[in-house]
Image (cartoon, rainbow, N blue to C red; front, side):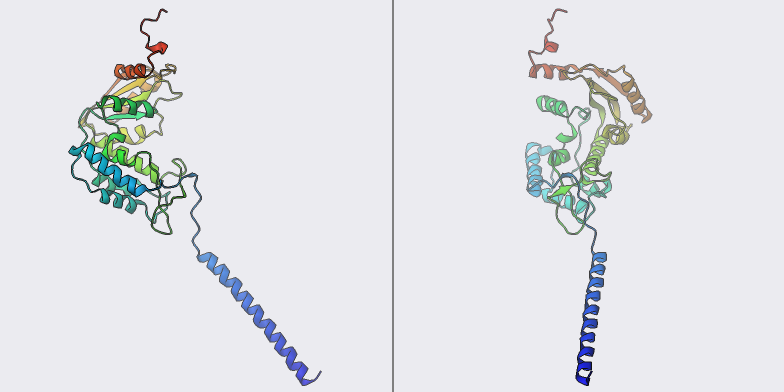
Length: 296
């Protein structure tokens, strides 16, 4: 082998070695990049943020103030800002009630005594009743509840803005954007309530009339001030098509009574509160339960 051939082989070997070094460096670089890349957010199963959320929030704010001027002066754009401050660049499963405290402050509202109406498992009926009578106020009738009722939102950890693709479902994680907000709102409403606080419950529901994990038990009752709340009055309402599975004397209600009294609150109960059953019959005039002249 002459000198020229030896030089050619040496250059070829050096080229192969250089190429191997480049490939190895590239592999190590890719691995390092993968280690430094943030793990993407878990893919949740709830719907994404409501489209046009900002316009809806600000629009509802102005609409409520036009309907109820006694609410006072409120900054609708500030309310939107406090919502975004609570959730932007945060894990949507690590949003706490404390994150919403400034939002609670800027939406503060005086609740008239004896007008608070809480509810559990009677969502549709309780709001038909308050709309028909305008005698009581549910959380969803308050300024804060009116603005955000039925809306969905959550932020993104990697960037500002809302996640319009997916958000955690209510029970997907403990401290998610929705559950923490409504716990905060429910606590705020219960704390502001005074006099008699009414609670509409479903007497036809299966199991305990107020589940131990319900917001009524975990948030609202503990948040009431015994010095300003004179009585917690339960309305046990049967579905017009349902069975009478719970009444004021049932075991489930007696257990709930004990729980309320443990919080130094006075308790009372009424079965099928007549104004509510009257509404049911207005909406179902031909139902046999509404025929007082039936022959048994």
